[in-house]
Each structure stands twice: as C-alpha cells, then as structure tokens.
Image (cartoon, rainbow, N blue to C red; front, top):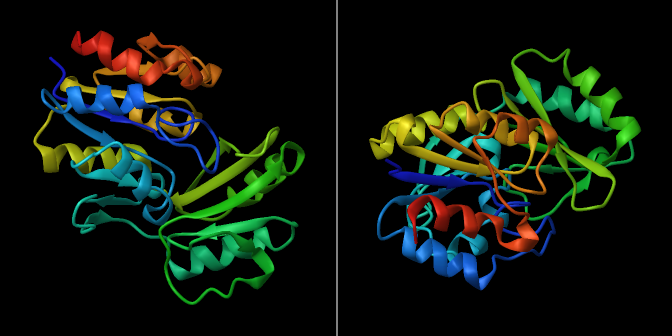
Length: 247
C-alpha cells in the first residue's frame, strides 16, 4: 500500500525550464492525493528557486531540497536535516570550475555567477556547474572524481544539448535524504512511490517500493523503473499518481 509519494520537479512535475510551473491537472491531482497519502518533492533546486513551485502545488509535507543535501518544512522553512560540503571541498570544486567559462550556482544563491567571481569562505550544501557542453562535461567529471567524499551527477540543463553538474557531499544524495525523510515521516520504503526523469533520481529509486520513470526520462532510469508514464508535457506525473491511487 502506498503511503507516501515523492517526486522530482524539473522534467517531472514541471517542464525542464527555468520558469516552468506545474499544470492545473497536476495541482488538482496532488490535492486529491494529499487526502490519502503524504506528498513530497525531491529536487536538485535550492529552496530559493523551488519554494514557489512547492507553494503552487500546496505541498505541506517535508521536502528534499538541493539535490539531497537538505530536508525543509515548506511551510515554516525550518531545516529538519542537512549535510554540507566542507570549505576545502568547495574550494577544490570551484578551482576546477574556474578553468572553464561556466557559471556556478552555490546553495541558496538567487542566481548563478561566473566561477572566477566566487570566493570560498564557508561550507556549502550544493554546487551547480551550469550549462556545460557535453564535451567539457566528461573532462570536468573526471577531475571532480579526484576530490574525496563528494558525488557529482549529470543533469539535463535548461539549455538544450547542455548539462548541469550537481555536486554534493557523498552522504548527501537524494537517497540519503529520502532515508532521513522516511524516518521523520515514519513510512517504510515498501510503501513509497517515487517519480523522476534523470539519472540523479536513481538514488531515489534505491529507497522506494514503487519506481516510476517519466516518458521523457533517461534510458538508465527507465530500465530501473517499475512503470514508465507519459512525458512531463503529457502530464505523466499526474497520470501516474491517478493510476496508482485510482483517483
């Protein structure tokens, strides 16, 4: 029996667009689902860039934010759990990023800025290297692999044919955060449905009894899924929730 539904935002609940918002059908479906199960989001976005989406969906249960580095109560904005990169790790990541012409987005900054302008003085939850060419992605990922105790995920960028690289502490993936969330909510993994579209949602699949991939999802995610729904443009998330809960 499903007792909790956790879904990604970009490419899942909203179009993969900087200004994407949920459809009315999804808003209505989430409202119906909340009457029967707990509904949460698990997003790579920081709270500064996701709160308006959570509020549009009227989500009140704790959510996984910033790639799995933080659990936040979307009503009070209280941080219920977090795991940060050390200042040394952040400094090493920024040093790599400065070798390329890309902007970085750090934790809860309101927008991205050129890597060369970032002066590291404190631990951070997540670093995004934004709009990376596919050619440079491979080289950057290889360099990041030499930094101890971090994990990096390639995510489809808002800019077509480019990649965003999401970097967190190795113990701060969506998997780790979802495990903590389930403890807070007192729900076992067998009773959890998760929905995603990209490879950075694979950690969610490791902590769920029922795994759904979007029709626009990655091949790797689809292989790991129990069910493949329609694309985000076709309201695949709403359809998957309606089907599973018989709404």
